[in-house]
Each structure stands twice: as structure tokens, then as C-alpha cells.
Image: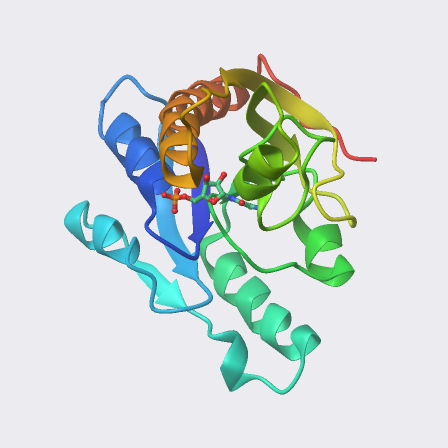
Length: 194
Ligand code: GAR
């Protein structure tokens, strides 16, 4: 059984996909807790599944290091095998990354190395990309630069706006995240850092 802490900042649709999968007795993953940097909407999914949640608000700490040390300590309390960033929209400092990586993965809405950063869907549209997609990668000390574990392509339609494209990307994200975490649990995917 692979034990997981999931970190989110927003609606938590990827979290929900993972909670649903983990609810099945044959899916060898246990979600120990869900954390956020804010009172995120998606924390309600954790409540629904009886999973504990916690918020470590960035604004309550004077600097990134003290904030991330508190986040780290809270995660350590659960002692997970894996930490999943599922729409966690803050950059984590090297001290945090060193503590958990390579057992720290992120899902990102583009085919990295294309369109890193917080606005990947908008940037792909603005660049006139014909296709974009989803990447799951090990988090390293850069922004969206860690070793790629899995990717899926999504075609950009001529009529797409940011919302429609992101919705189709998220559909693929949900499947890819559930598959990838299963593959890690079954040791078919080995997490390797840089
Ligand atoms: C997802 O599309 C995820 O890939 C993206 O935020 C969204 C969260 O959606 N993450 C990033 O952009 C990280 N750079 P969700 O809250 O519904 O799962």
C-alpha cells in the first residue's frame, strides 16, 4: 500500500479523481491527508471522503522558509511514501524539495518542457500551439524542470478558449494521475531525482 499526501490550491478535481480511485479496495493507495496553502475549495473533497486536511497559509509566515518548514513538518507528521502536488500553485524552496524528492511529484497542464509556470494553458493558446497536454514529473529544485514520468497529448481545437482547453486537459490529467500513482504503488515506475 502506497501512502500519499496530496497538496492542492484550487478546485481539487485531480484530488477527487485520486480519492475516488483510492476508495476502491483493489487500488493499492491510501490518501493519508490533503494539504493546502489556502482555504481551497477542493478541501471539501477530502472531508467527503473522511480524509484529514490541513491549511498552512503562506500569508501567516514572514518568509518562504518558515512557511515551507511548517508545511514540511505537517506532512512529516503523516509520514507518507509520496507527496503529490495536484494543482498546488506555490513554488516550494530547495529545502522542501530536498526533504521529499524524488518522492514528490507534480501534475502540469502542458507537454513539458513546453509552457512551464502558472499559466500553461493560456500560454499554449497564445503561442498558437496545435497540441498541448499533460505532464507528471518528479519535482526538482527548478520550476517544472524535474524528470518526466508520464505525458499525454491533447489536441488544441480551433474554437478552443482557455476554459474549454483546460477542461479537456483536466479530463486527461485525472486518468493519467490515477494510472501513474498506481504504477508507482506497483513499483512499475521508479522515481529518480536529478
Ligand atoms: C491542473 O490543471 C494542474 O495541472 C494545474 O492546476 C490545475 C489544478 O486543477 N497545475 C499547474 O498549473 C501547476 N503549475 P484541479 O485543482 O481541478 O486539480
